[in-house]
Image (cartoon, rainbow, N blue to C red; front, side, top):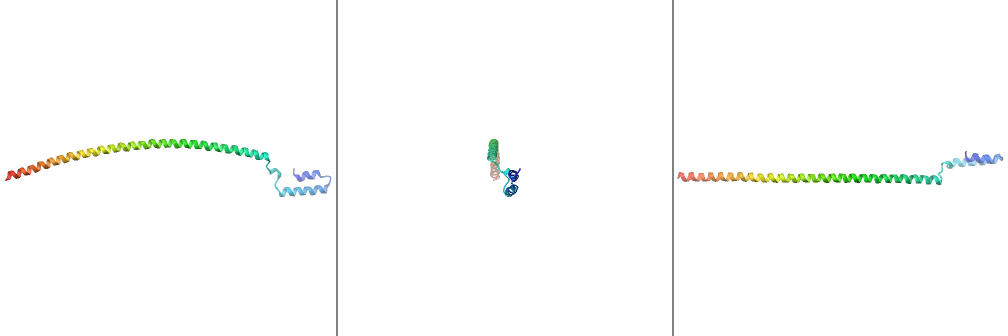
Amino acid sequence: MSYALKVYEVFRGDEEKAKVLAEAFAKLEERYFHVENVATVQDLKNEGLRLEKEIEKVRLEIRETELRLTKEIEKVRLDLTKEIEKVRLEIKETELKLTKEIMESKQSILRWLFGFWITQATFVIGVIWVLLKVQ
């Protein structure tokens, strides 16, 4: 029931006053906000409490997400550390293998050079002997 109707009911004895007052209240109600849409102090307090609860819920979700992400980061860091150590070990093994192969190559080259020197010395001695025999 609108205020205009209530005023009309109260001043019903004086019909003219009742109509004027009812029209005035009706125009005021039309022009300004509707009273039923106005929030009360209790409504605002309730809404504030609801928002505080929701904010706390969001904060809790943020903390949980933060903890979960921190754990995931630590796991990834640990996995990467393991992987890095594995790669370092592979590099060290490859380095040792290559060092061994280089040493074997040096030994092989020295054997061939020694054989070449012996053959060359034998050839030179043979040439000198033939030259000395021919004279």
